[in-house]
Image (spheres, one colour):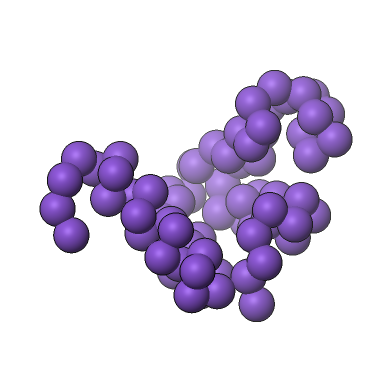
Length: 70
């Protein structure tokens, strides 16, 4: 898989989601990752600061039901 690093990361993310590979998806994030989806305040992140770290990313996935990972 070649190309720009962002494109490669996006493709790996999509592949992990399609394959329902939660651990592979979480491995794409660094320990200090910030997930802001959506950006700004929302019912997922009332203060608008997003979710920080791999564990928070998993919480975002579970609570927000953004990804149906098994």
